[in-house]
Image (cartoon, rainbow, N blue to C red; front, side, top):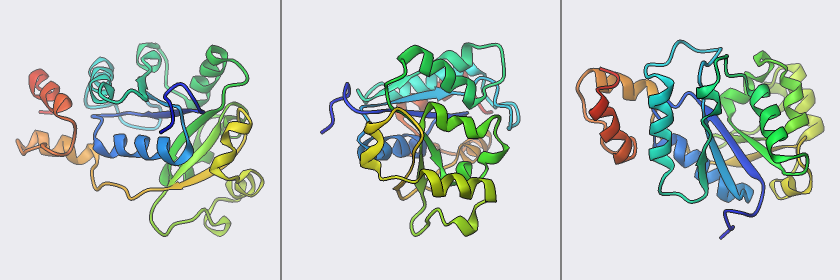
Length: 218
């Protein structure tokens, strides 16, 4: 097993409204498949491309901490929640690079849907200057250039690499890893909560207790 101190650092951001087993399984699968030493979970403070989250940033941050508490390879970064500005990934990567130095390999973890929308992100081509990108594929899906927007297909052609190569450079490569996604969504969890339905087995018990205690998503 990879020691938590060794290997590249995975970066996994999201609204986490609330964090659930689908998020955690993606992070754990990436850690194992890509040889990551740790995965840093970064709840968004003010996501620019989405509606206002159902729970305040402080609640989403605490739920992420509770969800990550029993995995020594996970850590939670509060900076986006604490910042009084929109949460843009490029700004987060600039901050992390300044914090961790120029040599540490950073790996931004994305689902395939997020990757396909990458050209709509602020300064998206600069992401590769600060981190590698790792895309979680659906079963049977591959990053076929014909299915990608032209600018993204060009980046994919030039940057695709093997996962084993991530430790050789601090940034700039694109890799894929396979995972079977869990059929869990935060949208469904919020709807179930509002309807008074059970959330058991969708998210960690500590997160479930927190939602109940603070009467979130009602």
